[in-house]
Length: 549
Image (cartoon, rainbow, N blue to C red; front, side):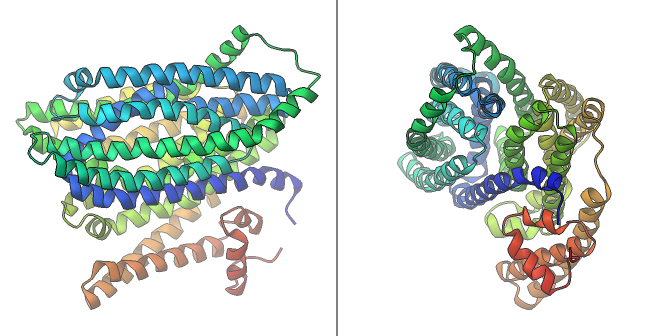
């Protein structure tokens, strides 16, 4: 039997698993629809699409991106103390802030699209077109994020998960259809790739709108419960509007700054790459094409497993806030340990799998594109998955234990060093776009190191190494060798990538699953916390992979 402490610590992973499964589905759908869209708009169009998204993301983060996590933290802390009046009052003021900041940012992007293109992406012909279509999305996502934060603060991830799936499904259909339609309608335009990118951004807007409608409906259903809780709350001292805004600012600003610095690394990379490649005499079209390969065939794929760590971090915060406020330091440490372990169990094989099957995956997903360059990017840069997973979770821990400013400081320090590394590689080597890949690895490594030092200092936390890191590393290495062997055997026999890659992936999943359990990387109770964990335990017992407890 698992101890009560283990059960308490493990409970939050159930909600995290719901969000993780939804995040995987969202990323997979995103990856699937990006394949036809990427083939429709081409590498140059993908470069313009990614450039527009860099601007969109930074303004979204500045205006409202930190709101879901902040609202989740503020609501969960007060609901844990049954101070429902204050919890929901802060939620309502948070919504007001989101409407104002999201609306302002949307108007700025729409009316300032040409200026933004001229100032930051002059080498990309027509970035202003997809930016204008993206502008309303900023407002929609701002409102939607605050609603998601409310539900996450009440420790239910289901509304977020459901809305994310519907959002991405609508996004997929509209993006591909609109990209095709816009390319046909503007076939004579000298900004044809930009119109294709604009089709993709229209899908983003449509998907976000559908998700918002779903969340508003769930909120209206849930509102009577909120009213009852506020009516029964006789203990809360009503806080003023000024106090509410102060609490929101103290909570939101550090999260926004941390996310802004992270997003700045992407914009800095693109700006440095454009400038240095231009100085070296590389054509604008070649620069846009290389940037498109980097964003579509590398970052798109590595972001799929990274989504899991974001889901765990989001689900972890309300639980950690409650435990930390109650003074349960041991429980907090146990929860952190499980969250990190959960992420590493997934991150290591994801990084290894994308590395050993890099070229086949690129050739399968993007048959008409430069699979050599994209494959080499995955081989050299997929290790970033491990460090992004770890940095995301540890950022969430620091924010949960009221060290809100530390992730900002760590991100800033890492960004400064990151800029030096990327600039040096671009200027003094011939790495070209691979300098961006190197920077995409070094940045999260630096954040991980600094976060680890702070967790030890302020929480007395020291990560267990053997089952969290060593077992997944050994199992992933053996899995990688076996997977590559299976792939080449089937490819030699059939000469078809799609036929060879399926048994290779199936072998990878089974071998890794068996090795992790055989090496005692997971206890039975920990396995139960994974999606379909109890079903997996039945199979594990039949294969004698788990110890009887």
